[in-house]
Length: 133
Image 1 (tube, helix red, strand yellow):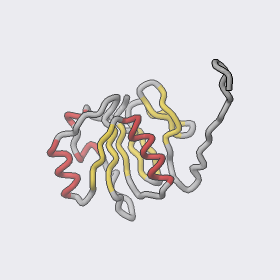
Image 2 (image 1 turned 90 degrees about the vertical axis):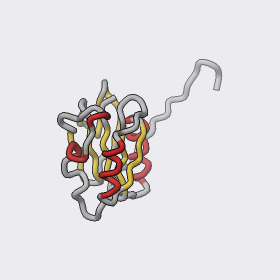
Image 3 (image 1 turned 180 degrees about the horizontal axis):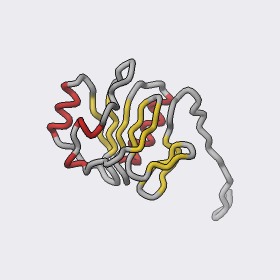
Image 4 (image 1 turned 45 degrees about the vertical axis):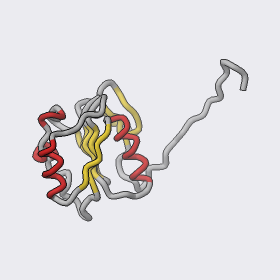
């Protein structure tokens, strides 16, 4: 390939059976197929929901996740996207989620969205909460 010349490669993910997959970013939000979630996103293997009134990372509580964990079978862990940069959630939040029997994996929201796709392709049964970018 000569300098300055690029080949056009289009990547498509076969997400049949994987549930909702983040397919891109738009502004501070996330695209799931044709839907845009500008203010945060809650994901389970069977649904994508707008995260209405998503708190700041410092104000995060288990109550702010709504019924995210109420699926059968129970999810393995919570994938938490902390916005445009990696920030640690309150320790009390993590302790409460762990006391419920779930692990918590924390990363910035772009990385969490990409990790979601990889883990769902592996058919991992997880949930995610992605704060806006």
